[in-house]
Amino acid sequence: MLIYFAAPLFNEAERAFNRQLTEKLEDRGCAVFLPQRDGVESNKPPWNEMAGDELRQAIFTMDRDKVLEADILLFVLD
Image (cartoon, rainbow, N blue to C red; front, side, top):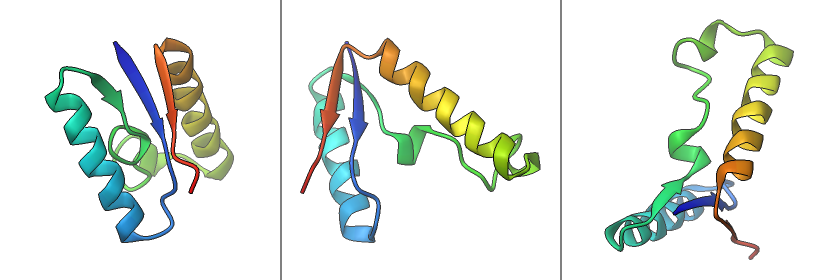
């Protein structure tokens, strides 16, 4: 079972919450796609070689594919 975990990333507290909840889910046997951890990292190859529009398209494509692959969509809306 794959969970797509969508949540705010505006500050370190939100990112830490996302990581902690992801770890708890994974400890219980769930596979989790956490974009902040598993998504495109613009400062690492091959992403760091992409121009703005190309990078935005890569992020969109990866996230779209993972949403479609997921069994559960988990959204944090606080």
